[in-house]
Length: 72
Image (cartoon, rainbow, N blue to C red; front, side, top):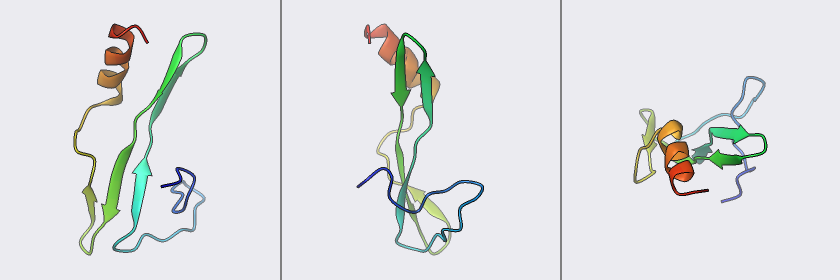
């Protein structure tokens, strides 16, 4: 999956979400001179809403602490 593929969800987007579509939610943290981290949750659109497909759920802060603890 190309991370720049549609739908591109932002305040000026005119993309429509339809059942069966899959997209990523990619929050990121960048610390100048240290490191950057991007966490990607994959979501599919259903007839009644959305379903998280990512097999684990961690906050971006928890992931950043794990990276720092690992020396990265």
